[in-house]
Length: 594
Image (cartoon, rainbow, N blue to C red):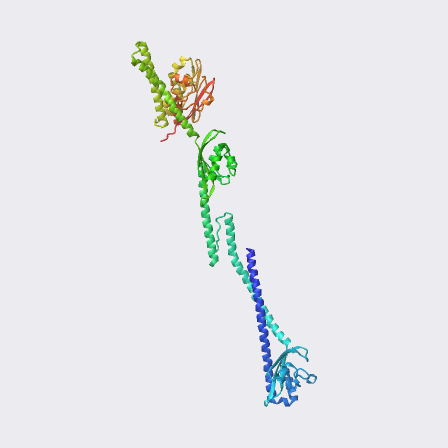
């Protein structure tokens, strides 16, 4: 902006100098010509006066009196007077001795009057007498209508130059003052022009640095004021748009960050431009290893390169499932679609990844559940049907055999009843259709009562049950019936799956806000690959022996849901050949939720 100020000032200075010079030469020329004409007129007027005096006073007939009069005039004025007769001889001269002067008939101004009979003769030349440049004016002297001579007036050019020089000096001083005033005015004008422009530039630079609060706070009138107002309106509009963009970007980032689905944006050159945390979690890669990397490098483990390439090149949507086996096995539902810029120009592809691992597991569990229910129901129904058909056929006449068949039918019916009851209870628990009746429950007392219930089963196998040592009562808030069902199922399982002469250990640990109940047996143990599925419906580690034991395969699933309904947690640790330990964690105070 300093350069603009200097350019305006320099341009104005140059124009001012050119204008002043032109004005100088024009005015000086006019002054010189005007002063020369005035001097010539002055000489003419003086010559006419001398001519009239000579004519009226008859001085042409008295040369001595004429010379005396001329000398008196010369004392008062700076003009040189010369009187010449009709033959060119000098009669008198105000500044020179006539005896030393030659004939003047050949002088241009005298020749014009005496020879050419002109009314006036003028000449500017070097004086032969004074050896100085002089301006001459000559007019005829007429007496009785007869030319009797000429009067010539002259003045030194030096005096004219001095007068003109004085005028030029005054004019020069005036023009210099005008020039200085013009320069100062130009500087002030350029400053007043460039200062608001400089303010505009400063604001635009701040806007360029993303300081959208920049404004011009100075009031100006005219176009500068309109420009400032426009810049402020532009800055305010830009700030609004940027705030909207930032807000939208925050919303987009918040949405992308909280999406459980992975989102990836790939440009038309195959580079990843955008991703989210879900994608990082699915691919087990940090964003630095995804962003600005080629999609083939990023999605190589998914084997969806061809689908992405097809979407980018053919502008087509694609859908497939992909499997990841490291670090965890995952099943991803992959949707690929092209995305476009303005004008429907292809810009790349959008990939959306849905983790459907749990869905597939649930589908498998549902399928297994249907198969297991069908299998569990088929066996007792087949038994009931077979023995009933045998009895109805009348082929069995032996009373003991009839009673045996009827006992089998009864037992299988009871088994069906238990299975259906457990299924209904499990369904109610999952749907929270069985509200808990929360009361204060003594954990030690419930364990002791449950031990009495299964004591016969334990004594038949000679299994020793080790209860917690006598201690103070451990009180928790729970549903007594449901809590008793939890302890009964776990202790019954421990006795059932423990070999003869084995041991079952029950321990209770009371902490500040929680109670830990552990039931450990010395049975066969559970394989490690079965631990994760142990609480699934109908899942059996040893299917044949479990079914023979009369179990429905739903006990642990029911226990798990009952524990969770009490805001607790159940875990299991086991080692084959050494036994298993089930640990239940329950809060002492149950939070009531409506």
